[in-house]
Length: 377
Image (cartoon, rainbow, N blue to C red; front, side, top):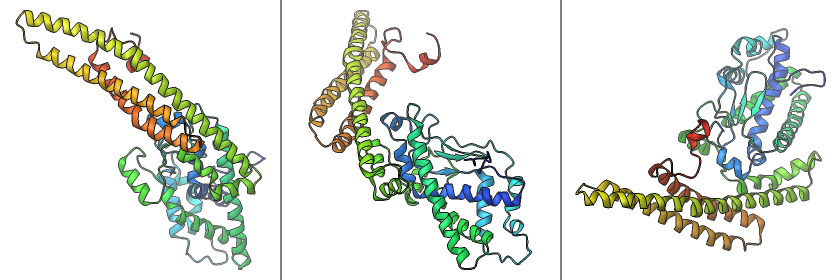
C-alpha cells in the first residue's frame, strides 16, 4: 500500500514519527482482516481452490494473519505500555517502544507458508488466492475492508481528540484497542496442524472448507452494507455474481465427476481386469508346478475388491447426479454437488484407483503417475 507520491505505508522507518504512521496502517489492516475474515475467505472460493487450500504450500481455509516474532513483540509491547502516562516534552515514541521498530525487524524475509495473510517486512501477502483465480476479486474485497477500517479508525481518533486527548496519544489509544480486539486472528504456528483447527474454533474463527458455504459471506447483511456504502456493488449485483459463481462451481464439479467416472470405468477397470487375467495365468501355472500361489491369489482378490468398489461408487455417483440435477434452486444444487457428489464419492473412487495403481504393473498402468510428472519414464 503506497501513497500517490510512492511512500510505502507498510515499511518501517528510521524515523519514530513515521513508524507511528506505519503502525497505523499495519494494525488497521490486521483489524480489517479480523472483522471481515469470512468475506476474504469468500473472495478466494472456487472448486479448484477447495482442493488446494490446506495442502501443497497453500494455506488453510481458516483466515489468520502471520506477522513474525519481531512485529508480534512490537505489538505486545505497544499494548502493554499503552497506559504509560506521557508528560509534556516526554519522548512518547521512546516510551512506547515505537522508535525501536527498525532495530526489531532484523530479518524481513521471515515467511510462514501455511499462513493465508502474512507480513513479509514491508508488505502483506494474501497467499490463499487460487492459481487459476482472478486476483481482482480478492483485491476488491481486500481494498474494500481496509478502506472501511481506515474510515472507522479516523472516526475513532477524531472522537478521542474531541475529548481533549493529544492527537498522537489518541492514535495510540485506538491502535491499542485494535491490537486487543484482533489478537485472535494473529497466528504464528503451523496452519496445517490439527491443533490450529481446534484452537481457531475456540477463538471464534471459521473454517469454511467448501465454496458454496464460503460465498454466502458476500450476501451477509454486513457485506452488502459494506459494498453499497462505498458504491462498489449493489445488493442485486452481489446476488447476480454469487449466482454465476455457484453455477460455475456446479459445472466444474459435474465435469470432474463425469471425467472421473469415465477414466475409472473405461481405463482403470479394463487395465485392472487385464492384469488380473495375467495373475490368474500365473497362479494356475504355479499350482501346476505345486508351488504355493497364495500371494498371487490374494492379489487377485484385492484387485477384484477394488474393481467392485469403483463400479459400485461410480454407478451410485451417476444416479445421485441425476437426482441433484433436478434441484431448481442454484444454491441448494451447489450444496448438493458438494456434499452428495464430491464429498461422498470422489475420495472413495480415488482411494480404490490409488490402491490399484500400487498393485498393477507399472508398464500396464494407462495414466501418468505422480513421479512421472517430474521424471521421464
